[in-house]
Length: 178
Image 1 (tube, rainbow, N blue to C red):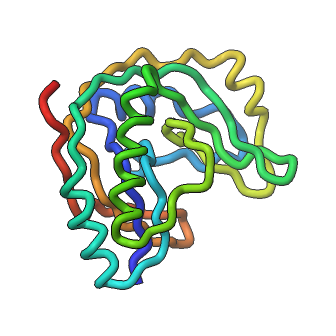
Image 2: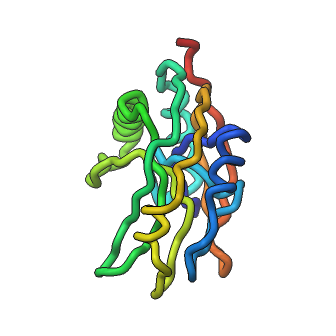
């Protein structure tokens, strides 16, 4: 079985800016450069044949490339506790349009449509049962000033491990020149 998702990989200058913003929150598991991504669509566990169908379907997605900037901090909560710290992007409309095209392509190969609200973001930290003062971090930390051109999206495979997830790009799909 393969655990798949589709994402944008921030180029090195944006990854460097994200890494520089990390720190100062107790109990945070900060993401590594290899873990930083903007999820376009989580797929989940599929067998090899379905993975091949997914890879082929994504090859039919056509969308222009776009520039994104980092915008603001945010957090996700689960059961009353902070689960993740993230940075949003701007503008989000090109990313939403790409997400919708990917979702439609996946539906054509039998993947159910995404039922969750789509919020374009890059997770920078995850938390276990306890989290430090995330609110204070978001209040005091400066959002990194970084912009980047995105010219491709990727199909990733996720491997769950004791130190968190590791991600491997298994296919790259070019975005068209704007």
